[in-house]
Image 1 (tube, one colour):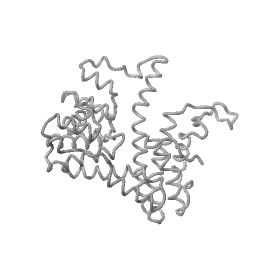
Image 2 (image 1 turned 90 degrees about the horizontal axis):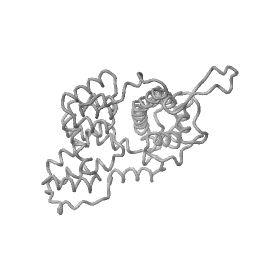
Image 3 (image 1 turned 90 degrees about the vertical axis):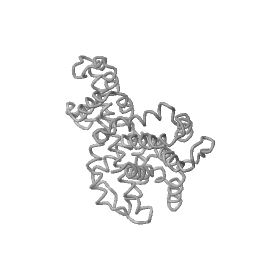
Image 4 (image 1 turned 120 degrees about the vertical axis):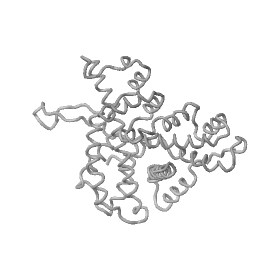
Length: 332
């Protein structure tokens, strides 16, 4: 697949995933809002003439600016796409200074920030698929992009073997002092060992859970289009996509965020289960939504499905992935 085609597909995916910002609205106004936000992702005006950027190159710069305007916290594949786009427009800039001035105005990027994206594209693209498959965090890729080819190959081999090195471990390997990285948590005794194991679980588990929830959110957004046209959502197809991921996501959430407690309804105190989130809290809403999504018998009828997805499910998952604040999440 050539670069322009990959970028176009990424941009289409970005637009689809970012549509939750318009889901909570209602009726025709909601659809108009979604159309206007897609047409004008960033109202900022760039004076390309004063920057000395040729008129023929402006569309490429605008394409890159709109990509950044549509993105929030970037997933692995989006970091690569942004790096490819920035490398493209840097090549069309009259000078490095002009590129830095433009990237600061258009994308709110520092010199180092823009350089990080471009380094990921230039230095890690040979390993793009495995890094995306492993959902390597952006910070880890920025560090890895500064390494020698042998070091990159070693880290990639670890990823293929199922190990997920932390940013600190990657930096220690790059520095030539791998002993400076943390010991294997499984080899550390006492409370320090338990804390190290917990940190490792969070470092590895949180990105996996967030990516799973983002994928679910994308599936929901795609399925909701008929609802906005006054039609029913295709329930059977959506159940098939979400039921099992929702069960796993709820278990991952409980495992990451909750301790265990005895079952208050049983005299057998040795029986324990995950504790519950604070009553009425947004995370309780997330847990309840995932519970319902994970059992098709809990889903509303087709006539009410779209409304439930818009009012309860989408806001809860948006909160869980950090796309929206906590206000307005239903816990019913």
